[in-house]
Image (tube, rainbow, N blue to C red; front, side, top):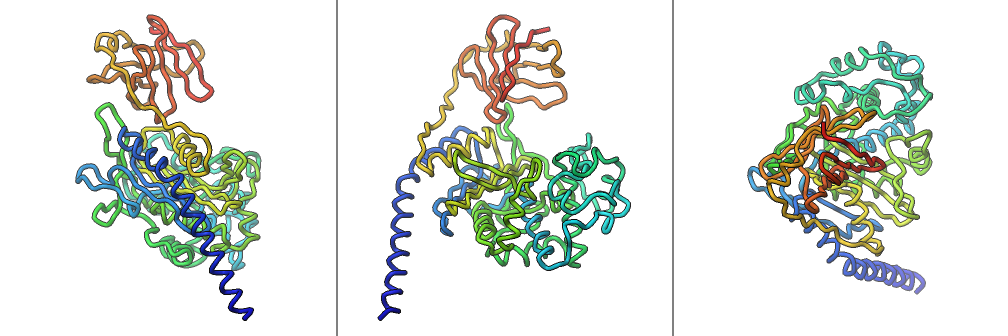
Length: 443
């Protein structure tokens, strides 16, 4: 009898959770759909969004194309390069090695790469925390030229070796992809298996991830996606980084649904122990170990963002609510943070007004009158304003040009960069971005 009552109670609890989840879904889904449809229709976002709560995927939707050229639409199963979100996977596997007594956080880099600069003073923990002082390969001035070509492990290590450390270990924190590339190599050396096999055996199988693996050349026919950047002519296909380069720092590909499953498994201690997880999310200096604090109002969140080529991604988990959100994108023409705020506000029932993407009509003569090179004393960059077709564009010194959407005859915006530009009077330009509020004069 007691056993029967217990079973009934469990069934009632399960039904209550299911009913509550369904009611919540009914309340947030229409507005969340409207937000993503609005972003897609206005060429602000192409990608996929997934939310998991209490181990159940409560929302999943894709918008835009996986491949524009072939008119292949994105779905919730579309696979994206997730960039630096890969560091969460790499860190978790290093913690697994520590639990298996195969590595110590105090171990010196010199035990694995004795010829790297200052290797005898840099520890595994320093690398996890981005406080090693190692130069980042992605900071190379010619990186965008050679990143599309295969690089061997020896070539990458040689590049890191050719630069002196930027500071002594523990002196400060400074993000460096070299840290996690090397951690990926160390994982391979200790296990005797390549990163792809480790990822599959240590994480994908445990978390039941169906479409998460070490990426390679993009294959649209196998559910993967190309990436794009927004230009005055519309979406432009971005170059494709050879995945031999990012390795443990950014070579993982996944879906938004797989990412929330991974986050859920990580915070349910299915990947690493509770003690290891508590240590992993503990901030020391600027960073945690492959994971950052990412709060939303009073909620404590942890996760990572990622960017590679035109791909952008983010995975955030809120342990108190057993909630994970993943956004994977292959085309972004709007602030990623603005999208996250919108999704979370709608899902959690906070007040939120859908963005207004309407644009003003401005005559060609007025647009032409703004052309020129603008500068400001003491500011290192100049800004070139130019008309490209029917679009006003801006280009900072040494940077790519970006299109400006007219808000009025004198005000323009570039949503992807959070930039607002206005022309308050003839020959004057005001640019606002983040904390920057600068008046510039035409030369």
